[in-house]
Image (cartoon, rainbow, N blue to C red; front, side, top):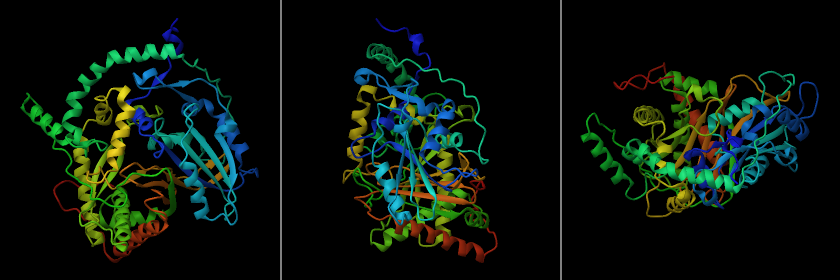
Length: 509
């Protein structure tokens, strides 16, 4: 007999974007994101920072961490998107692990260990997260790598999870935690019932999504490069324009030239991480009248230009950047999951002059933001509704295969994310966090990811590459640092003179 639906009234269905991060996983592509924190080895009270302390802390705060309790409940035959079930079962020993680096424990060894850990997929039979406490760093610090699945968190909601684990003082007194009310894990029969109801809703989803998504399909970064997509979007825009009150902006015409990173990825990763001065970035921003994000993109563009040029691999056309944007509203704070959109923007690696590059980025970002504002916030979700959930994983695998194929244009050359972080020092169970590096992932067709997170007075850079496409990412990180130094030297030579003089409006700080 089918269980009463009320037994699972709190079950939460994944959105099509959440489900896409599950569907894109294959033996070579992982769907999780990570944060690498470096901490003092002791708390302010003198206790060692170790796995036991981290387990105690997570157990104390479990009532505030729903994503750490959620387990996946798949719908039979993939008739509908999966559900999260808060079933209360939890093996803290499994999820929080401890290891040590061999001497001397330098940053390259730490990066190799991190690369090995992020190259392994999370176990879908358990809540989709792991924490690794890593000892043996040469400076005496302790590293803590937190790994969470992108189906449960995006950049902003991942930062929310970290803000629950970390304190802005040396620690908080343990509060009497309310008991977590476990949901009974549903039977296959019940999930089949849910799937059949979902099947009936699918035509309605498509009808609702059509007018929103079809005219903008060429702005959906995961499919815009596929044959026929631009033609469908163009035809839909023509239809929309002739309807009463209809108008639709033209799709993005940014294209990605081929570099070594536009290929199928292997299961193996390489990682490099480092800090840049936020004060120096702000000096450049204030001198040239642009945004911190413009400077971050200019530094990435400069580093990629130098690195590719030194290897005689620099394309004559500008690179294209795949830039995730949060569309999370204040009301959606604390809801976790994914509230993201993506912009594709030109990175002028074809321009030799650093200030001209910064000006071009500032203009390209202003144009991209204007077009982005004209797009529906739910575009990624709506576009996915044209694919029945039963075909979702198969479609993701096909798109992934095509993304690495020669002769087919690629969506972008590089993924670049900039996630705002805390300005005040943070503590893990009373141990001060020295730095916090983001460690993201790569995809077929885009084998490089540069993610940036601000923390106190630093911008913390994490570069992740596919090992077969680039064995040593540290010279690329050095090239990014040289790009910052070059802009800073030019900024210090001149009085503040805004780079923007066009009528498109002033750049926002």
